[in-house]
Length: 177
Image 1 (cartoon, rainbow, N blue to C red):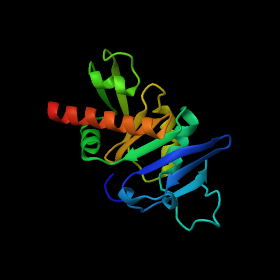
Image 2: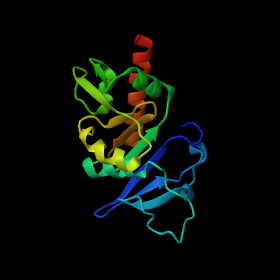
Image 3: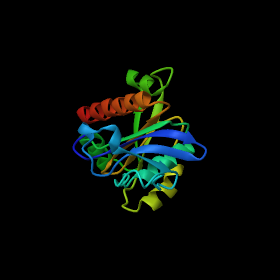
């Protein structure tokens, strides 16, 4: 994660939804436990008396993913590969017949996946209302066009693995072009 870009979250409570998310403006290479904020499903800080930091502007997208998947962790990164491919693609990026697809939970490489691309918008409330139609339990990721990928998993380790698999796929596609 470069500089202050991206955000990470981990689900703490399912009902009602509460999760830890990185504070806005923090260098992701230097995070400490004090750089995470506990928020509810609406992005409201659970204990405002404890922390003067602000949660990531993209908190509502994390909440939406928690509501519509079985994710326990959501990672969002900005990389040149996913940004470039999202700008060159319309509404999805398709991959098939690659061994690395098994890293996303498929039993075989003989599958075809479509990673959805959502048009970027600075209105996070709007994005959180349209995101459910792009979210699939089968594909643990979605891309904001020209912005970055969100990947999720049942653990932080799985979310990280999914980010790494997606990034391999994006790099492969760029080299393929």
